[in-house]
Image (cartoon, rainbow, N blue to C red):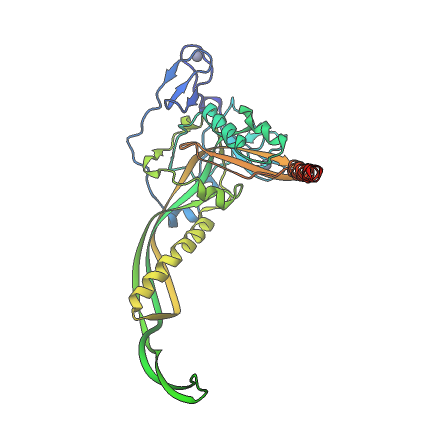
Length: 367
Ligand SMILES: [Zn+2]
Ligand SMILES: [Zn+2]
């Protein structure tokens, strides 16, 4: 890497590195307060061809920014990418201090777009403090999260896919009809009496056909560092506000390198599409009941976007387990794991028992 490649955002009035400020979306000098706007790209966030990128070679990919560094967490394996003056620091996902030496970032599929942070670190910390104060029986150690440095801004990697589908199916259509059935019953006097009732039956007819489908922006996380539950609970993201990717948005933040690649992400998107396709097939078969014998799903015109979405994340270790907290960098929505303090619960139970004992003693003394 030649030095003139290096992309810095120097402050034009003092030379320090400008950092992205979520409050106003400007590059801001942390020392003198000088602000510069990020040039708004006129190009929309474009869909890219899945076919063309599926077997892309590393030399056809690019780094997130020319001076980007990356470091892999020795404990959980997450790789984060950042630009100087940002440092590796503590791993957002497992809480260990990262000791590995950052190296220049490996090329990746360039993000098509991102949602810039609009929640500041201070706002995220305030929300977090409130969240923590409402957690009963949390161990005291959890309070360390109330420190502003406990969580850190990081962009998480996602894929979105668009696809057209064509599904050939075979199956059976079930139509209900009713038959009169005769049965015997004992009446009140103990006599056997003959009665009739209507019984529903199903007549099956072979069915086959083709259904077409179109899917738009199926969002698939490309990170494995946070639970699916937490990631889903952070939605909605407001993807209609996506901005075309510009490394300037990363200044002062980290970005996680995708752990689920483009092809694997599409396999997950297929799982997301399957229930809808199956529903369409059932509707196409019609009748009162349906049986699906075979489904041949074909996907075409598949396009994708690699997206970066902003969170403040941090991890806390308690009794050898990792507890994660994540704050949506757009909406300040908090999702987190929380440990229970066995001691605090035991003390409360003890206090209640003592109270009951005192009441019993008092009642007996009054007799
Ligand atoms: Zn400055
Ligand atoms: Zn880690």
